[in-house]
Image 1 (cartoon, rainbow, N blue to C red):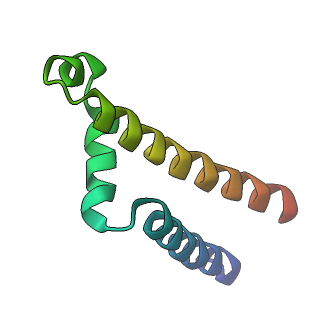
Image 2: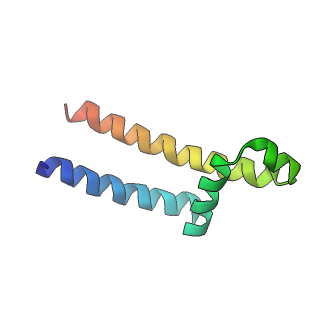
Length: 79
């Protein structure tokens, strides 16, 4: 593996970890975000847990979009 690739993987992992800590505050909340992202919305409606589903899903989507944007910017800048 090239050195530049290894450095980018390490930096992206560190950035993703810091961003997750800013958005979710705890690892348990990050896991809840993954859970609610994978859980179909109809189950949350039936369990009357729609507010948590909505909040955690959107936090996880924000984290995913920012990480994808960072990777796309890296591809553009480092062609």
